[in-house]
Figure 1 (cartoon, rainbow, N blue to C red):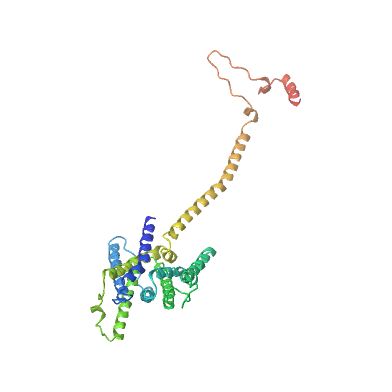
Figure 2: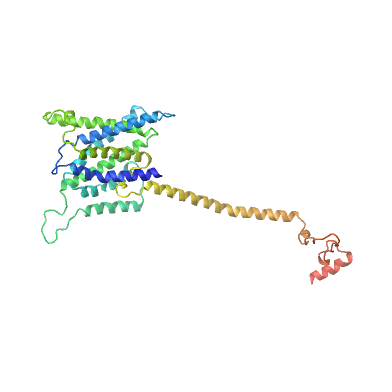
Length: 359
């Protein structure tokens, strides 16, 4: 259980600082480096870490399960392409909106994730959950409306419309990639690190292809991308790379062992829904056991009553009314039992006792 709190805390910090670090890496509102190289280096970092962890896992016995069928491997390029687009949309969004607006718009991922959960995975949400999603969408929208007061203003929104369109697109892409990736992660019992290697290998290939396409479009004016990959990089830029890479590794772990709703809600609240679900399961188990004990108690009482009734039927009734024999010492004589309870009365007394009993 402690590992859930640790992952939740780390992912909360990384996700919250992502927009801040990306904004700090800009200079006068522009990127002095090619921001397409950041997702590429992040994919390389995740691929290297996953390969190292898989190698360590293979040193143990039994060996981890690794599915190599082409039908399964062919499913991994799809989320890699979606994440490629999503990562580049994120950088473009931060050129139009500030960090706080970007973080608020990130909450729309919960809305789109809930909708896609229902459409693609068929998971049902309660009425309270749908109400929370609607309120979250309304709150995110109204937070971006600024009051003009008596002065005239050109727009009611606090940022350009392009930034909001890119923010909504980013939320939709994040939810789509997350739901599809969760489907892949839970499709079989393969090793998490093997699944990550497949996912990040295609991610590295597609990000490299994107860099090549940019070079062809620019006519290789600034040279090939591998010669200028680190141009304009600062310490903050490297922190962005590590942030993206670490976030991806933690998210894949959550998708494997939790679900995408938890991943989407962690930036908003550090409380893990998975832990609450475990507590609810424990409470339900206790209630089931208490119900079973309560159902068995009347049957136990009936069985005890039947046992007592059977014992009383097997024992003579007059023996139950006999008092216990008095304690005697060496010279004491045993007292005769009272006349009314004499087990063997004489014939002359039978009639008298019957008359006395009837009166």
